[in-house]
Image 1 (cartoon, rainbow, N blue to C red):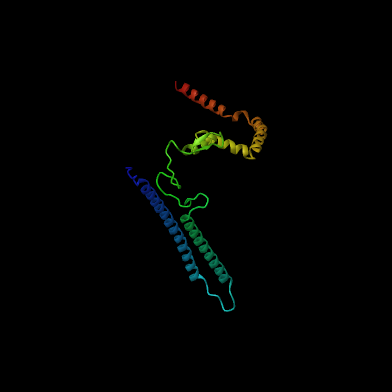
Image 2 (cartoon, rainbow, N blue to C red; image 1 turned 90 degrees about the horizontal axis):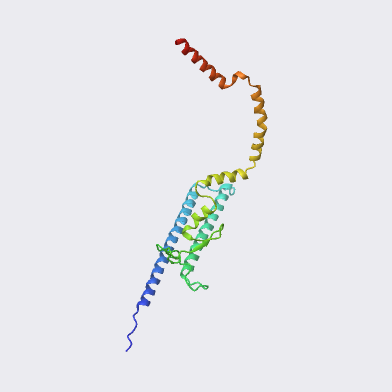
Length: 218
């Protein structure tokens, strides 16, 4: 007689479905709390504006009252947009996608896995092609590799950045021209300076005075 097979597979599938439901419920609860916070903030601003808004005069609506009405309409539209977005997200999360036949809108929030529930180890990490050297790099090492490949890391990063700024700035050519133009002016100043005004002559005079004073003492 053949023994009946164990029901381990149905139980495991049921457990996985329950975990997905719990993850989806937690996600939508968090989304709902965020939306409720936004609505509360909008209601507070509306209440403050209602308290501070002046009453319309008997002659007709003033500029302030018209502006307040426009602002209240805008706040109502924002509240309506937030509610429709939250309702759409919740409905799409519970329904099955017609393309992939799965609940692709229900994101998983489990440690060690991505939003789709896929767990990656060090051996099966996804690799991406570098935009500079066209090599396939793992996802965990893509950012530092790209930084080094573009020459933006290390001690030479500041030098490379300064060179790029110098080459792109329009003032480098003018500064070079001004330096070349200032050379003959410096030569003229050196020619016009008297021979006794050099600092070396002053130092030699001090040495001579010190030597003469020491000889007089002897």
